[in-house]
Image (cartoon, rainbow, N blue to C red; front, side):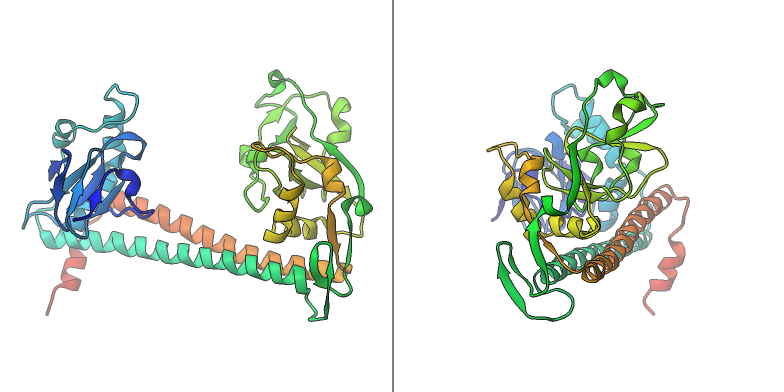
Length: 378
């Protein structure tokens, strides 16, 4: 019989599991809901697909036969999870801990009709399945983009013959040169005292944590500072400036597109101003690709905390295609990003729809009775 020792052995997707058992070596039955009741994983759930011996930290929740549907109970627990987690946090210990007596007294409202419970579960499951399908499609689209960019950086857009260079295979008419050959200036982000940060500041200050893995900037998280602009005017970003994180999330590239207020790069960013020979967007796509990222990481120093310097990056050889090919690569990447963004929005909307539907159905504000009649056997 398989043994589950703790919540960390659950998979990444946790469908939810009224009768609680959590003592060591207790046996759960198929269709029991396994619920994490201890530590930072409190609230994770799964439905047992067979008999398991369960250890500490996991409760087995079993519905009363003929009165409750397992899948409905999964979503009911999902709905009450915030409340259960608050109870676990209020126990007084360092880590959340949900005891049987605490959870057993939690009042729940369950439709008396099993058909209604099953109808509610069907609605919620349909939304979750749609979300999972979009998440799979999103992962595949990201893989497609990564593979396509790798091909473009080694074979170009015109199907021409290739050549071997110090950075690997590139199209015959592409140049390869150190970044300094196409860079007009570079600078580290400036430092200033923490006391100058202010919600009403006159300057936005980009940090490494404001970038996602593809270098997109989330201005909603960017802090402001009240600074004397004259002292920092040489650091104020201009549209088209190429940025790269030099510490922390080391080596993520971005391009500043402009903003409604003055923006400074933070102390852990390096700003490069490129010549017209190299598109900053093309360089961003190259540096963030698997090939480019690997080469950037190789010039980073530090055994534990990696750091980049402007000197090491200026010495880094980069591909320099003809301008028309740089723009072609940029357009391909933009099309891929639009598809990825659209799928991310769909996932977010389905997530919001699930939360709203869960609230409506579990509070009884929305009835599932019409669905019962629709799905009744003839």
